[in-house]
Image (cartoon, rainbow, N blue to C red; front, side, top):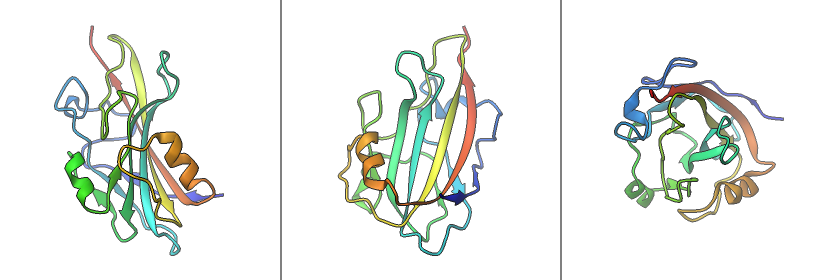
Length: 157
């Protein structure tokens, strides 16, 4: 069982509406994220963002990133796929694209977006563009700590 990891953002607040900048209605850029100190055995971090309220595809996948160094405690806003040249890798989302895909729920509906930060005792050996399922398989049994930030977004009619 993993321990709890605090996750915060300078641009997002738990249960406060997501700023449009981080949605498909705005600039569609990933928000900045910060997290607390993980267990000493941590070798890397992964981030997974899903929408558990999506009806068309349950738990719609918006973003996954992994191989974030163990000594790192934040990601800046606007992570691009060109940043995969370093250690960071990003996966394929349910928009069938690699990288971050911002919220775009049906108009008039409020959906929750769950930003999960996972402290891992491995560095997943997965290429850029891997699926969420491949990431989940690679990290199964290797999650030391997990934190969540849940942010709602509602598209106006």
